[in-house]
Length: 63
Picture (cartoon, rainbow, N blue to C red):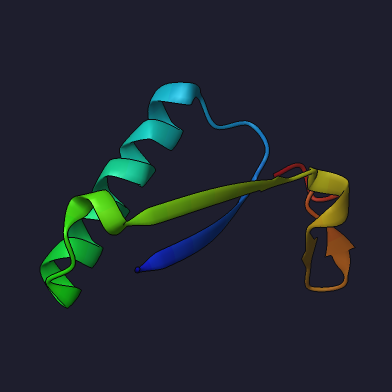
């Protein structure tokens, strides 16, 4: 059973997250030959103050 875990900063729309799920699922089916029914995609949203970039939080950097 292919499983993909995706980390994103908060702020994406439901439509954007649905597109990520669809495209990652399709890529896993194509790459592994697994049936779509066996593919799992998990999105974890991380608050911007918990995402570090070059020693600063994404929130501090205005991302």
